[in-house]
Figure 1: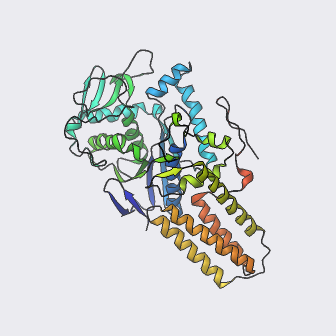
Figure 2: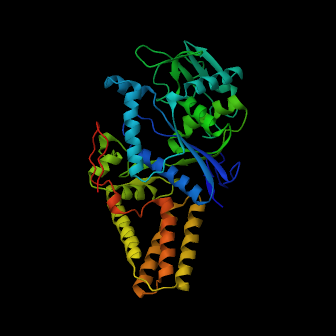
Length: 430
């Protein structure tokens, strides 16, 4: 039975979907104003591993991810580059998926752009207004925190006093609020900024309302899993709960699953410190996508990961050994038949792998199971006891492992020598 740490309850719980074998999962996607960095990709690859393991367990998954393609930073960058909002964000959406694909990411069943769902956001805000949760001032609409008694149940933050309910990102503009804790649902139009004409007035959506409207449209008013980085717990996910449950009166999400922060060389990633890396920066340094993926998945998602270039070089050696192992196994000239010891090794290794991932996706233990399997299989091949049926069964298990981790890939499929260009898509490399 898969067990996951649920941020809502602060407990590791058995995962029991609402409508088995169907699972509905939403993941907060990128804000497309620039290239995604490796901290972003730690979260997205954790979600990819969760997605893959849910499918490995035999569930039918519907995975939805959003694209935030309107906010203050995006608007500022589009204006700076003299581009329309759509043209500017199209470019970075393409870059994101080029990087995501190269890292072995499996695309969600549905990817939703915020700007394609303005009507759904307005409808949700109208429902909140009908339920007494909103107020309007100067053309903007706000969620009144005081009308939702459960506010804070995800983050466990105590809200006595005047604690801001928004973030720098949400409230960078000056808007008049009744209470500093309240957050904006709809921002009044400003000069020279994109806006939509709606029955709320001319304006654009706040950040939080996007995910509530899109996730409930695609997955229903209550669904199984909502995942993202731990930095989103407050205020973003806390506000999602308030506005979703404030509109529907139903529980919004059953399992909230978050990936911890990525540190780089022991510090917070910062351009000024010289430890800020995009995926493309690392590829330009000669590192392969498989090694980057391996390192980002090497620590369990609920623990901070210290990403270092030395560690990445070690990951390069590791994935090279894994690839060499798979190649030797593929090329093994084995006698017909099978060996009981190999059958036992396969069963033991698969059980250990699954037990590790069932335990709140303990990737460190799962990778240890893979490495012990490789070591013991290498010894068996050296002894000449691997027979033809064994070889097929061993390769099948490698494929099972790789359906989750995607680290045994062949080097010829890498993008290791692709060139970065801000004006053109990556070139295919062999």
